[in-house]
Image (cartoon, rainbow, N blue to C red; front, side):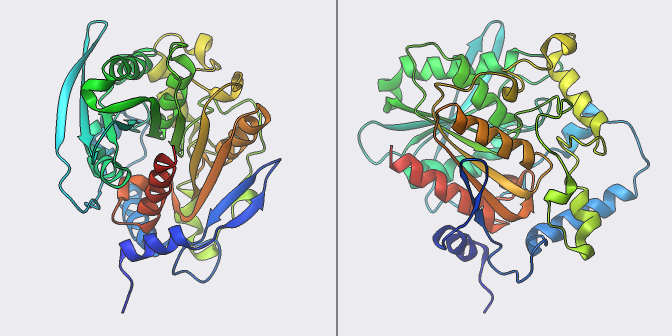
Length: 364
């Protein structure tokens, strides 16, 4: 009998990782649970990516388009929580913006840890409620309170609007910790892709009286500019099966720093996010963390994907994080590519990663 996705997620989580030394720290590598050869996508991921790739090939070439990106930015999650975790909401006012925040309370009694989740979408797309499935799972399994913020998107609200929204939410729940039934000394920031970037930037930007306990970052973009050669970006650092090369290479365009990727897309995203301040801010440490000091930041776990163009910058960042005197755990999930959390309940690596996050929340 073929194992189902949730059984395979448990298998990934429970089986020992392969450890790969990398500049003073180890990368924990989680193999594909039911694949026999290296350099191949998980069969479930490959099915999705091949279908999308074939569809894109039929479309005429075009410059990156904001509205198209927004239409295509979707999640396809299947419920993984075992109980019904109610979704509540409130409006956070930041400057003249009204920012929706959704909350999920999985407490079983007493004050609990609080996790602020910040969704991905290249700073220009996506919505908080698309991530209710992982948020409900975290709340239930960790017995904590999760806040899921629908921050202001660029280019309508350029930098630092999204960062201000996220930082304001941290201050808001910190001041009202008793109302939310949370322990304000156990605030964790988490996010995926652009949301991981914002979580890290918020940790750098919070007032001194608020101590973020931990960061949980899913394939975060930490070098938006990606043109200064701070680290070696080479396709040779990816093991790619010949039969899947075309599909896998299509997943390596983001953050590609060898001049062969879709740099027009990265530049369009960064210009949209920074508004008219591209030249002044493209190396700002709150935008691209690899350019700033990382000392004094919270313990961190970075979840990466084997076939993600951002993976190499994330591994470089993890090394710099450790060199700065911080604790950083980095876990690489083989067989998947960027945004695998968008397929929670569909690919087993997503729930396996959430299991790791839950374990760390319980250990606070």
